[in-house]
Image (cartoon, rainbow, N blue to C red; front, side, top):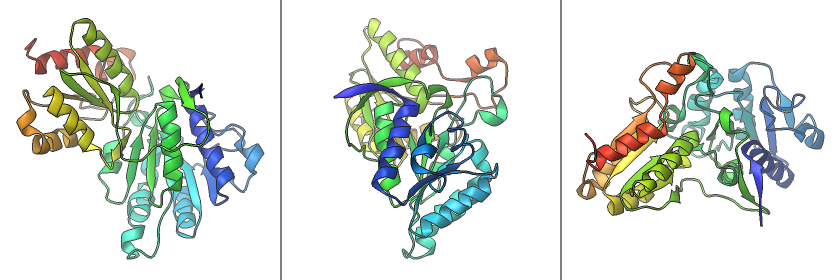
Length: 328
């Protein structure tokens, strides 16, 4: 059986279930306790688990990320919530230099089972300092796993898997989609880390995306179908480890690939996918890999700029027609 849940409720269920299951799991972050979380993801958790396991922190990302890393090295399983990954830049020293390197620096003597989570990417008119995608930044670091998924069912299963994992994991959510609803199974289940999902099957072109860019991608696929163009749509769900095999198998069938990525174009997720496809599926390509990214600049405040800056269905449809040589 399944019921409809919002993304925020699915994430809360994941944390609550894991905290009931394992007393070493705890949540900490800005406003997660008394205020129920900045986006109400932790609503009611303070009441159930108390202030020792749902902990409000100062506005000091580097400090409480460090506390989390130390707790993880000493046998606990912290969930560290950032109000936004834009603020987590202040904590990158702990994430990149301590959490990611604990296992290798200790020659395998210490693990660091910690989850860092919060919203990534643009959220409307929030301007330059609050509109950045950090998936490619974090995925570049050996030792970190990176999840970026906004489907409520998958997000719940992936977060549960992340909490149980012995490696440090960054979970990237979406401020705009915390209210997005879809069916979520009842009962216990996990979603494996590092496995992509095919959201729509097709034969003419492969579309690959993740996080909230899945919505315009699926919309573009629907519109293309009205014109007789069959698009296969893949949701990465996990950025590192990257499930390149699913993409390769799709490209072997469709012979064309368009990657939709909200990140900046230089050295981004789409660039990594393009490289791997030319390495592992070059002989199957009937057109160059094409990608749709955010503009290569900071996102301004004006609503017209926001619209122009981000990928959208129209841009995706045009890119598909270009790789199909329908337009030039």
